[in-house]
Length: 116
Image (tube, rainbow, N blue to C red):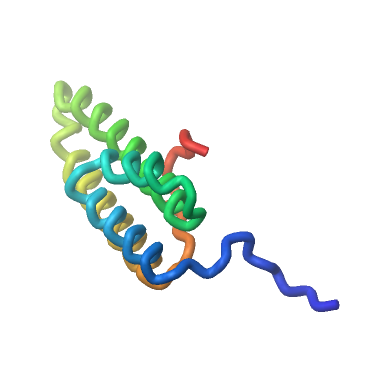
């Protein structure tokens, strides 16, 4: 008997990889809307639902960050936080898109896991 770890998600087909890739790229431009749409419409595909859930969680985390930065603009710190949030959003969405193109599961390191 071998000690290999078996992945619970089977290798996704090319269509699932492409849809997850588009979902991550669209998250850069449209926020939580692509993740929510894929999460609700593609519930039958495990890989797409998993990546849509992660993109949705990241979008919600980013949205909360923008809300906090907006409040902090009154004490002039928010102006410095907005570019950091934008850069993090861009980097993590690109990392998610790269992982999706390979069919790998991607988890953003410090996203709030509100959708399970």
